[in-house]
Length: 103
Image 1 (cartoon, helix red, strand yellow):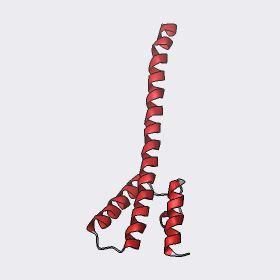
Image 2 (tube, rainbow, N blue to C red):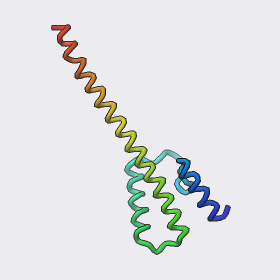
Image 3 (spheres, rainbow, N blue to C red):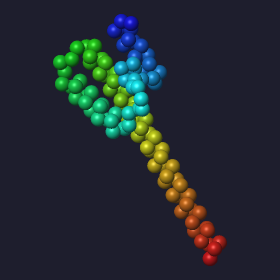
Image 4 (tube, one colour):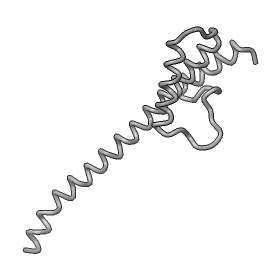
C-alpha cells in the first residue's frame, strides 16, 4: 500500500470512528493518563516542527486517535459519577421514608 493510500485509509477509518493503523495496539487499550501523556508528547513534537510531511501526518492521526481515547475515557468517568450521584439521591429520598415507617 502506498503512503497516500495508507493516509486515505486512516482518514476513512478516523471518519468512521475507527483508530488509524498507526494507533492500534496489541494488548490492552491505553488508560486515560497514558493516552493524555502520549497526546502531550505528540503535540510537543508537532509544535517543535522539523518533521517531514509524512511524519507530521502520522503524528496528527495518532493525536486524533489519542484525543478520542481521552474523550471516551472522560465520558465513561462522567457517566459513572452521574450514576453514583443518582444512587445517592435515590438513597436520600428513600431514607426518610424508611425512618417514618420504622418510627
